[in-house]
Image: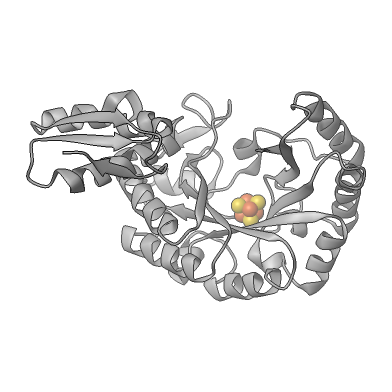
Amino acid sequence: MKYYNIPIFVPHYGCPFDCVFCNQKHITGEEEIPCGARTTNIIREYLETLPEKDRQIEAAFFGGSFTAVDESLQLELLQAAYEFVKNGEIDGIRLSTRPDFIDEKIMERLVKYGVTTVELGVQSMNDNVLTASGRGHTAGVVEKAVGIIREYPVKLGLQMMTGLPEDTDERSIETANRIIALKPDFVRIYPTLVIRDTKLCSMYESGDYKPQSLDSAVVLAAKLMEMFKSNNIAVIRAGLAATDEISPGGALVAGPYHSAFGELAEGEVFYNKIQAELDDRKTAEIAINPKDISKAVGNCRRNIKRFEESGCKVIFVQDDKVPQGEIVRKD
Ligand code: SF4
């Protein structure tokens, strides 16, 4: 079974907040507000590109704060997508929103219109970081929203950011621990990027904000991934998807951007695992699931090169009996 999201971006429209890092137009690469008819067209066109069988599909309203937009527009968009749920062409609807725009009435509406997954932008569970980032809510609001969502039959995803103003690695780890305690079905990890025309960009230019380096963001994301994974919480994305806007030469001004950020972080997870097996040894034969080989070798052979530089030789043996994500030392 393969999972597909049909992305429908709902830009900044309706969001009364101004998170310092956010310029939704640049982040989604879209400015136009979708309407019901456009939603129908997007879903219909996307469906034509998908295989007929063994598929699980959700229409995905991303990019803004869905439940904060005008209620009549929410209903128009939901109704358009729900038609496809009712006739069995898609399996559900997912959306992302803010924790302070969740209550029982909102959840009743979402469930009534076939919403199956709700993602909350948590960003941090540290109130100093939330305030410095202009989020306009506290960590307590996140906990309350999660409690409400859990009363309904929907999957819950939580998104966190690293490298926010006033953030530290320790605070990100504390955020991850508090997210783990909320038992989401999955998480996303986004390192903070400096985007043009944002408050963060002014802070960066005046020297009031220093972004994470790519290396430190990768090392931290790898740590967070391991924390979530060891608590059976899937990390479905690390790093923003590349768009024409979010890339060097686009609206990206600074920050730990890499087009394969998630791959770098997964590679780091394997690097740490292999390093732990090496101990004081200079050579090791490591069995690994064939599907993990590129992660273990690392982006552009980054891990192999690092082992070689430290005088170690690691030989990978592909073995499909080794569970994905794990390694087994053979010698
Ligand atoms: S709540 Fe979301 S859409 Fe609104 S400013 Fe913050 S990040 Fe942007």
